[in-house]
Length: 230
Image (cartoon, rainbow, N blue to C red; front, side, top):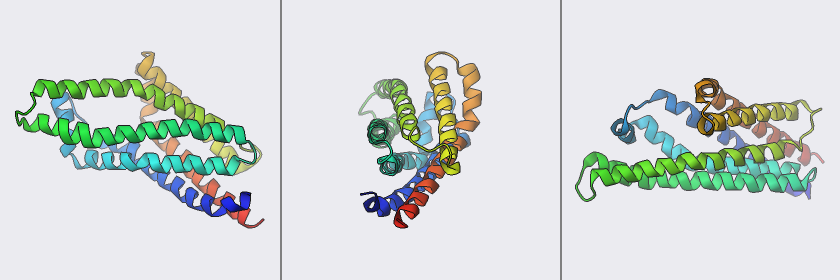
């Protein structure tokens, strides 16, 4: 049965490498633009870096979901329960990300923010401003779902890895760091601890998560090669 997964693991390993690339771009891009106030934040839709990031965010969940699928196939023989559960939690996280990406790109940015900035009169500026603010309030609440699903899926998947294998150990260690940083994100947003968590997360989260996904990509490619030699 495992042999049948070999071509899939190779392709999913490549997808994991693309997931690492989109992760790096998504987490680093916001460091190259800033906005103070509601109007400036709305006007970011005309910033090329911000606009490019929204399209990357649209495809990013697909690559990360395929990464999770590859991980699941690679460990399924070792632990089918943890593999299936990890993929289920990852699926909730990634589909939520995809829906939010579609809404932000095609509704919030393309319709509400664009109409607000143009002021075409069809809908009052106050109404549009209210819609945008409500959406981002809801988004702030959904971060807890995204982060908690990430912690559960990542923890379950890496728990099936072999700590005596150097590459798998590296995946485990970087997973532990990303889980810790994600906990910091939760504490900063929901427990009022942002004064000290933000400074830790700001520069470390993106690079650590990128390296973690790169390692998963290399590991999946290695697993496909090992299976093809059986």
